[in-house]
Length: 158
Image: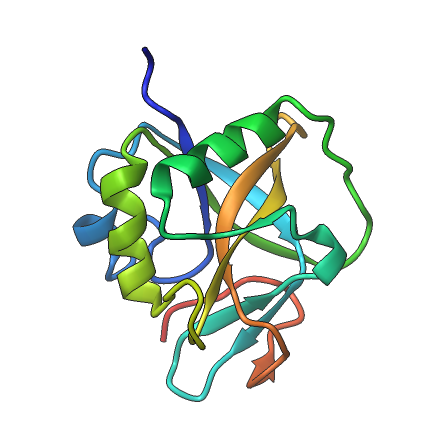
C-alpha cells in the first residue's frame, strides 16, 4: 500500500531558504510554487499569518494525522473551485510521512487541535503556479486579521 501523500502550503519560515526549512522540511518529495485565496498579515513578532475565507475551508486539522492525510487525498478526487479574490504566494510541499510530519509542524505553528491555538491547520485549495491546477492542501491560518496587511500576498523575511 502506497503511503498517504500530504500537501502543505507554506508562506513564511518553512519556505526554501528560510530559517525553519532545513529542520522541518527534510524529506520533501516535491516543491511547487503555488497561491491560495486569502490575505497575509505581518504579526507584531515578525512572522506572517494567513487569513482565508471561511467558505474555503474544506476540513479542520485533527490529531489523527493519518485520517487528515486521507481526508486531503479524498478531496483530491473532488473537483476544486478556483475563486477570484486576493491571493497569497508560497510553496506547496509534498510529503509521504503525515504521522511524523504533522505533529512536528503543528508544534512549530502552535496548533493544538481542540484547544485555543495561535494557528489552526485547515484544508484549503491551492493553485499551482505553472500548471494552473488546483489541489487540496493543509495550511496554517489565523481566524481574524491581525497585524499589518501585506497587500501583495508575499512575506519577505526581515
